[in-house]
Image (cartoon, rainbow, N blue to C red; front, side):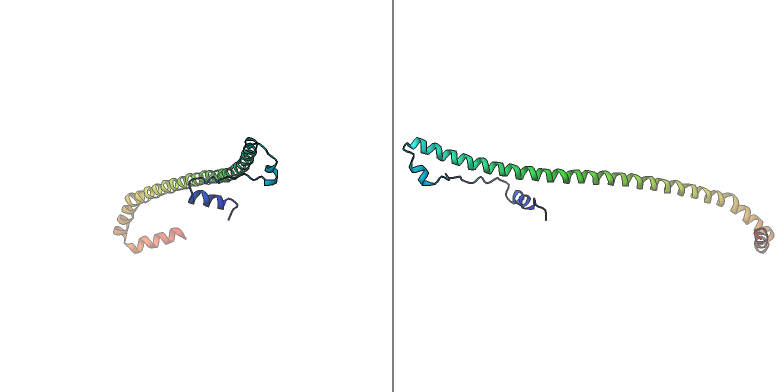
Length: 141
């Protein structure tokens, strides 16, 4: 399990990004010294904005890391695809060569059957099969 699997699962299961509700995070003793409500409101808003900024930065970092992970996988997939295409081209070349040799062998067999075999049959019928085999064995030895 990689370090991005939890984010991947989150993105798969929950397509919308859930933005938390941020609340002011300032101790009361610090706010007690604020006499004006406007100052108190501004301080609370700054606290909320700081939390939002921190949350957004964290999410941005997660998305960046996840994007790098996906980019690595895309590069690996592209390399696999290129290797597969190259392998298929080699296999096609081998297949073409096999077909070429098959055609050559068919031609040779056809020539043998159309030229040599009738001559063999003519000789075998005139002199006898025993004589033909005897002469072939004599030629071979």
